[in-house]
Image 1 (cartoon, rainbow, N blue to C red):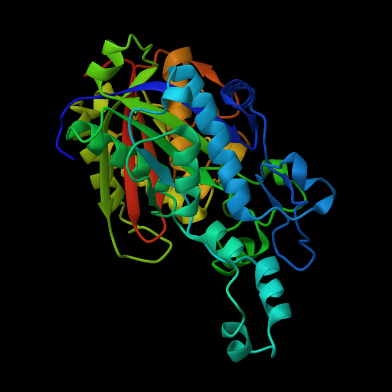
Image 2: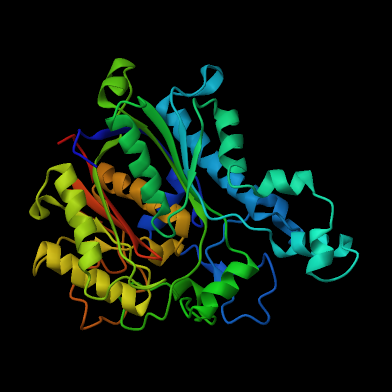
Length: 415
């Protein structure tokens, strides 16, 4: 991205394992609470990991199955509704710009696959492909279904955009929205990152990658970024919405600006399907590009909202990258994932909202479950207790599987 000025944020919305809405989620985060609990959505009897940061809906009570696509639509819609209400946009007049939704890849889940199998004449591939199409299933799972429904609900303009870049998805959605505004293609963008993949198949896959914590005896303390005893990340879900506007558009309608997206940077590598280059060079480039795009120097950053997944290699690599960019004494660094787990496609957007709240309230959220310092990680991780601080600029990191690395700079004032 070329530097064309900061983008105003005029509305924010959250759905996290800590609660529905910004107020509840932020209060619980600052209080050092955990949203990680034993999984009740499905049986974990034969799985290595039995817990997650799930966001449970009332209609799931009694063990009723709610499809991932339906939960994703609910989380994204609730976050958007909150953000639009705060921004004073939407309603009968619709939203004056497009929708960008960061979301996970779509697949047919096990209950739906078993339903197809039951309708097949023979229990093999030939029988499955001969099953007559199910229009309702097709309309629910195609990639564009969720953004199309959200666009219709909120009256956004133009074709809605759906994208996925693994753990960097939420930030990528914000960067695409930024580009649309910077290049004059839109004056406002409804930007959402959403995730609803706490389901059996996803848990199995990440377990096979040996990426998940297996601390089943203490789920609430399982996510422990930067701690020497960390043993993997905790799956989570939720959504965040940011209403982004050009400075001119926000000013013309008298909108209250909550903060600014000052810049973004990204850099990809093909080192490994799940791990970034251990020398940190790719994330260093992403961080430096974000700072350059925002027009600020490393010493002007007051706080870093870390990717901080609680996996042994990622946290060590991120610490190395931070020291490379910021020197021997970086600003304070903490990981929201210690409280809510890793909400994958939603995580970057959720952390962008938390970063704006950090600036607004002058409070650094803690890295909870930090008990044993790792001698290889010499960062101030704001251990266990929130801290008051003057914060004007935040760097928020998101580093995705497949080497998709994206960073944002959030600021109190446009640079």
